Each structure stands twice: as C-alpha cells, then as structure tokens.
Image (tube, rainbow, N blue to C red; front, top):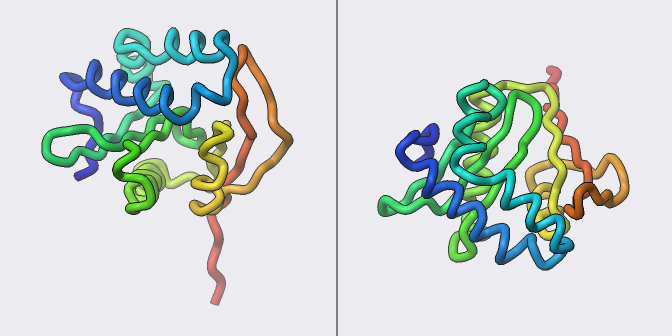
Length: 151
C-alpha cells in the first residue's frame, strides 16, 4: 500500500533508502559521493526538507515493512528506491504514478544513478545530458514529459 510518509517512520525510511543505495548505487560512486549521500539522507535532514515543503515522500509498505519509496518536489524526483526482492514487480511504477497523481506535473526531472537508468527509461524518461559527477555522485540527468492526447 502506498501512503504519504508517516512521520513516525522517518528513521525507518532513511535506513531503507541508505540500505538500497548501498547495495545498488554506492558501487558506482566514489567514497566522497557515498559519504555525501549518507550525510544528506538522515532523519533530521529528511524531516527538515518535509517541514520546509522541499520534499514530499511516499512509501510502499508491505506487511508493515517499507519496500519502496519516492521523494521529491513538484517537478523533480530526488530519491526513488525499491527493495531488491521487489524489483520488476511494478512497485516503482506505482510509486511514480502516485507522485504524478499528487503533483500533476507537465515534466519531471531526475538525476538518475547509473544503476537506475533503465528503470527510469521504462517509466518514460529520456536522458537530457551525458553522465555527470557532482560531489562524488555519478548520475545522468533525465526528463519525463507528459504526453498530451489529441482526438
């Protein structure tokens, strides 16, 4: 089930994000980048971003355990993770659909980790530039654009 992050679960969601990051994303980054991610992904920072309106977080909870999450603002995804045992089961798509329903953006950007490029492509994102490195974190800028249907 997908819901807005329950403030009582901030510690749980940051632990979840760090765990998935360390498994799938950290191997592509420098030590500096991994330290940067961990410094910016803690309960205090997440609570601050939420309280200041800089981030909205949705979680996918199964059997009282977080197995997926997406965080961002109206037109930019800052974090999206799905537990390894739940990859390729539609959870990322459901989280993204919830994000789209909540914000209704015309376009969405994301700085995709090297690992997640294919997952974002399956959601309709396209690369807008070559691989970048900032503060030791490797990423590829990507863009999703709402398709307008005409009759």
